[in-house]
Figure 1: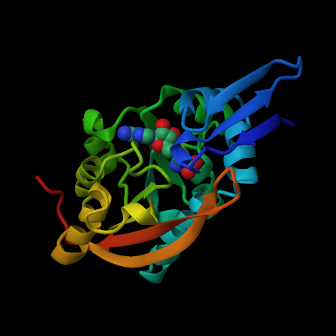
Figure 2: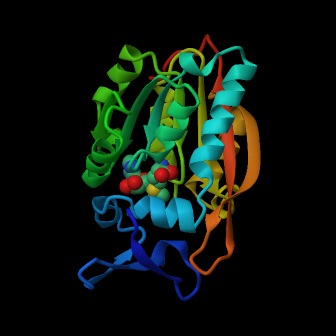
Length: 247
Ligand SMILES: C[S@@+](CC[C@H](N)C(=O)[O-])C[C@H]1O[C@@H](n2cnc3c(N)ncnc32)[C@H](O)[C@@H]1O
């Protein structure tokens, strides 16, 4: 579907304040902040047109590639990966993983419109799609066991008012045995002292018993609406077969 959309850069290029104007076929216009996810997901194709096509968001593809490649390096084929897509939005990441052969996908997002959009636009992609922060979803631990989940992805969903490091860590701790996570984090948030994620990543690397970071790679996550590159870090970590869930 062709959508008539005008992008409006934020005054100081703050990515949380970027907005867009959608012109409907009857000439009506509607203004959205990009981070007003409920409203954006409610319009079929709008997120894909703006974030994927115009702003060239690379996180879903990059993380899917890295997760599948890192697992393959350890002898685990993509068909053996069962992945939880955290902050899944309308399913762009899940679609990339499925295209690489990942058979089992579960998802969560704290916005109900994200699940509605995923079911509307990508029916059958996710075996389960939960709504809420995983800290408030006690059933997740059982689902990890029931579906033998061994992968966790979070593309563009950490920090910046999204998922906290504490919530992410509690979810990662519920993965037992051999498992990988692949996440993308704004490079400015990834340094110690810069954010809860910066501190978390530093502690993660230092401790060793939460897993090993196997990839830490800077990449262009997307463009701002003014056309400037936004760089994120793609981070992949692995924990070994002997790991038990933390209590
Ligand atoms: C930038 S979008 C990325 C969506 C998807 N991962 C992608 O790459 O297309 C960030 C998503 O994180 C979700 N989110 C924010 N806070 C969350 C939380 N505490 N728990 C789950 N999802 C959250 C938002 O609703 C939004 O759908």
